[in-house]
Amino acid sequence: MLAEELALAPITEAEWKKMSELIGELRKIQRDNLFVPVARLQLHYALNQIKQTDANDDTELSRLRKFARGVAYNIAAFTWPGWDDMGPIASEDQELGLSAARVALEFANQAEDITFNALWINGAHELNAKNFNVAIEFFEKARNKADEASGKKMASGWIALTELLEDATQKKRTRLNDTIAELRQSDEENGDFFAQQIETALNVYTRDE
Image (cartoon, rainbow, N blue to C red; front, side, top):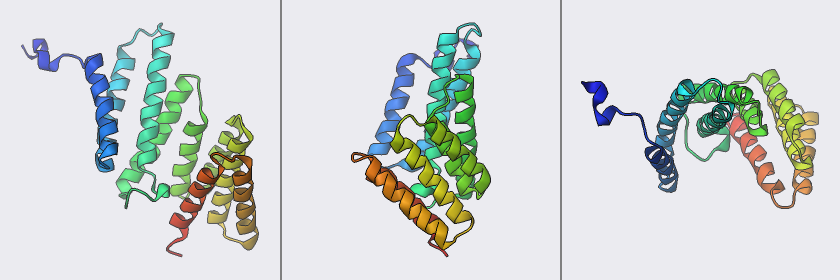
């Protein structure tokens, strides 16, 4: 019977690790177009593991949900056009990314461990969908979640960007420039990197204007 065939047995821990290694190798050879489908396989595997785990095993469920949160975040990150480093992203992949962002946040809620990144990626995809008010709400929540001043200033930068994209005025442009400058000054090690991400997103979403 098929149910008894080894080929149909559950994925082993060793195979699971090899799948993670495969994702790393795809990044090395710049096959980002293959990253998302493999990550989706990971997400489905994690969801299946969650379903099969004893409902009273809080430790294992929390671990699996946090892992699933990370996988869903990666899918969302790889389907967001604002990085401007992966070429054109099809509209259906952008829709998948928005969904994955929501899934990441749901797993974060279930694990009772809502992270800055889970909130931020939702804001980024809502921004991409031009749901500006919703995006600002997520960025504000991310700002409240941030432990360090630089994280709070980074979130403020995304809020300022969203406000500018919703209704471009010189006042909002000045506010964004000031916020980006403060971000660069707040973190000598990473401030410029995070500021450039905001500037890149600004370029992406205004290049056709």
